[in-house]
Length: 211
Image 1 (cartoon, rainbow, N blue to C red):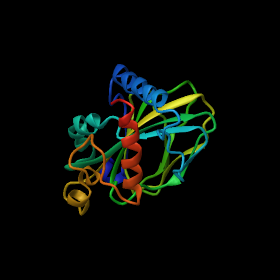
Image 2: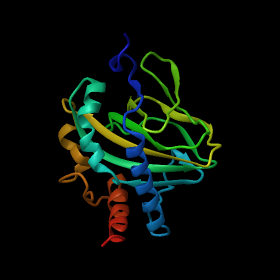
Image 3: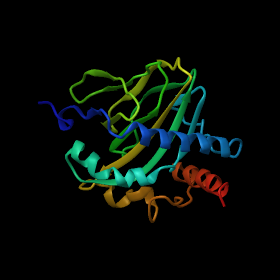
Image 4: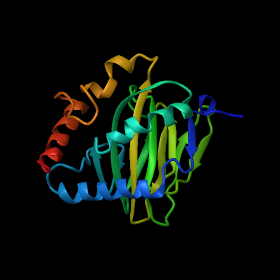
């Protein structure tokens, strides 16, 4: 039987209950409503285009709570790095890319979708292009260095995804990138001029809406 270690990607049906996915999706919609025009949407990401709303660090409890389940899929101890969530709108595109080196394990969870299928695609460890259709609550667990994308342009209305990222506990990033350089999950990152700075500035603006 081919395993995650062989292919580097697994579709986990029913990873979370539809009711749980719906709660996360509704929370994400509320973030969008309450952060409109104040920096909640990061459309500068070169991997995506079109009508896309993204927010960093919205559901980091999931990053920690589901860690044992994801470790079982991967077959190795993991260290949490960061989470974010995204709502793709009509006309969105997700081009071929691989994740940053520290994001060794990625998890893409379908929170909500309409009846238009827009599969998660990747080139697996065996060199095959795979296309994985997700229903609400399904998760794709994949190695971050795999090339992955969504085919073509999204023809539906909206699709909400939650993303969790980890590194291997035995790898080089376990100490340097644990919690993405933060003291703990759920708090802002140290300021910097790079990706961490973007996360920090954006998350501070988002958190400020609820104080």
